[in-house]
Length: 167
Image (tube, rainbow, N blue to C red; front, side, top):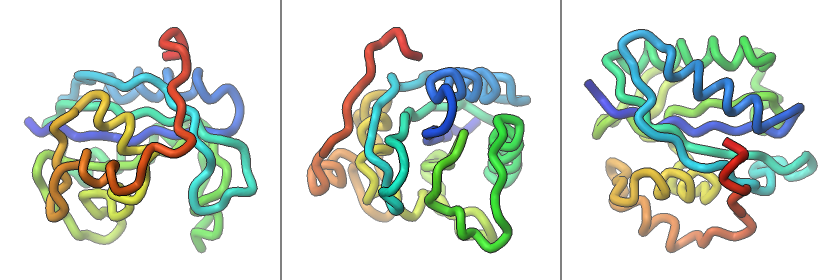
């Protein structure tokens, strides 16, 4: 059993409802159980800023699925939520109904085609670190150290929690 931390984001449609549905889908994965989810946070778009703000959260999922199988299941959840990815990746940081990122998978470091754990930009993304630290205050990023130290270097910026009843 591994604990995987999954970043959730959405900035199209009813983002709060999309994130709630994604959490239910994660909890329904075989040999997996949603242990905890952060509250929702509103954050400015990252990478490409000419789009609506995102709602973000992080989920802790206890799973027996290997990382590649978990990633495949996450991509299917995205597709079911209406997400499509362009083959040339030109939509990489564009608006989306749902984005699921495998941030951490236990203490593993994984470099495989299409799968990089820890997420290669986790230490640069306050919108992922803030909700991660809410549910895992002692989280460590393999190869980098304490997640809280990474956030201290960035600051939380314009990331704001939504009222608790939104999740």
